[in-house]
Length: 281
Image (cartoon, rainbow, N blue to C red):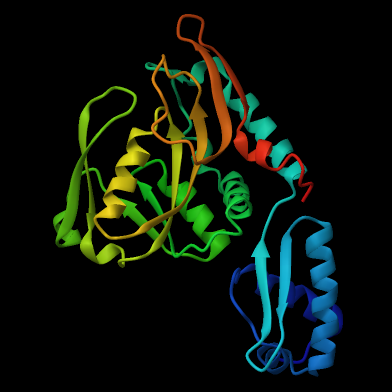
């Protein structure tokens, strides 16, 4: 790369970091890339770090030593997340979104790149302290959410199938009981898709009683893998006296009431905001 003026270097360096979250980049790499002294690079990084933290874009961590450098961790201020999700809750309360069984039509929203990027940063914020190797979801509507989260955390995605595909090779299949309708269903994961002992973050779009997610947890046992966390876009509070199959999860929104006759719904902020009440960042 040709030598840039400092203003241009700051812009290009910022973009470089944003495109490589959770990646350790040495000062030497930056110095070679921009044909600049390490002292100048360090000053630039100090400016970027300050802006990232003030504007809620994330954190820039510096690691000292010969193998050190900087690493960008995407995060979102809780107040920014609150504004986004309050707007999302309002959109989800539209009567025409109510489907039979108390589900919500969300496919159009899960196709908006900007919103998906925001949701990915929220989940990245929620699970920033966890050691995670891979993001897992089940086809199909959870896939865009999983990839958005993976983009913010720089992790691979594993997709659980509803049935075994011949193109996946040998696979592990299990039966599980749907928590909402008590039907026995099947899910499958290719043996090559996940290494044993992996630490897995499960992401899904909608959770009622949690039967599908519990099924993924059971499937992970077959791989000797560990559940590092569970994140859901919307959870349902309408369980009709059924108990949630597990309690340790993060939700961004919660469906607390739905009237199938009038198609009136009440959707509030999820427990992500309960967990971050005392943390303004």
